[in-house]
Length: 109
Image 1 (tube, rainbow, N blue to C red):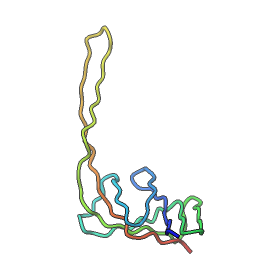
Image 2 (tube, helix red, strand yellow):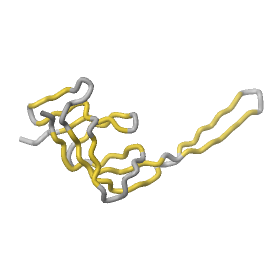
Image 3 (spheres, helix red, strand yellow):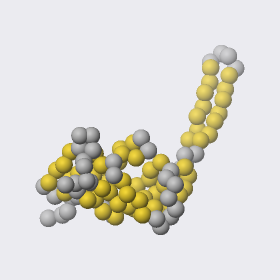
């Protein structure tokens, strides 16, 4: 039987489904590569057959990860145009992100 442990965490205004050993790309965090990071904003935990849903968060639950690298995502091009007005605008944006390796998912009390 496989160990299907996972959690749903909230960081950077978004929610992520994470499992131990997984790498995720999230909004930039201030930690340096190699540092440990703990996510206490855990909304849901599934550990085998045991399920815990938070109201709004699971008390005592925690997800531990390690910052792998800081990087910038691919460029997103934003193009605006008004027909028959001669207005065109091209703008680019690159979002700063952090890659995190999830080490463990700890269920709450």
